[in-house]
Length: 359
Ligand SMILES: [Zn+2]
Image (cartoon, rainbow, N blue to C red):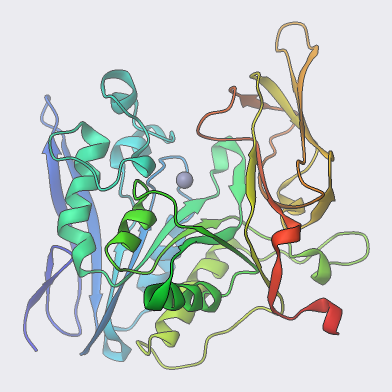
């Protein structure tokens, strides 16, 4: 086996390489590029891609790639692992969801809804186009990491994918379970304007992984609701490693959790009015079930302090999967990108590992 270009980077068998794929040059000469690490094994095999920071504030998940790159040994690897720690450097510059320049002058801001991009488009569209045409074609299975945004106190915890029929659907469902998170969100495949949706349309199992620290599902918690913290880096590294084992790229058996549920119906609970939001649940409550109308947070006016809105759980039973939980309150806009809370409809849940009613 010789030198080969994988995800735009030239790499020999058993080598690790880092390169930067040019996207464009700004008016003042600053270059925008996509950073790519490739670890190529000594034997041919699948290529697993790991991407982070489409959204510039969700940078905690970069740590998963840092650890993976330290742990993976190319001499013990079949196939290759491609890591892109920051796909959207423009948004990361400001640690905001989108890039300010896209927002100020471009027609769109959120790269997460602009796939597969547009070579004639503005910055986020150009980045998406370069990734779609130069990196993605070499990737067989894709993980798009989102999640914990330390400075906005936003965090969530689940792996999600679009369900499709046939062989691709089956392979995707298997990988989604083997990744080994407790909460697997399986939804009908929406459009192809998300990175994972577009990758699926190209025949590749693809996942949006939303990661923050996790304190467990209700069934694994103490009677007072407290649980044992599972740090996001540990969950992410184990998840990718599980998939590498499943695909026979590294030795060993996947490490699965004691409990795993697959869920469908998903709702974001966003306020009609912005202001200051006082949270009534925190990140430690992610994974717990709340009844209908349970108060998740309240919006008050920053001027008069009167209550403008109450955010309540919409389903009969609600599995909490995302929160913003800054104390004493969070700055909250009326709906839009970064929402207050997300819940899933517990009636859609099926146990895939450890059904507690069988115990
Ligand atoms: Zn995101």
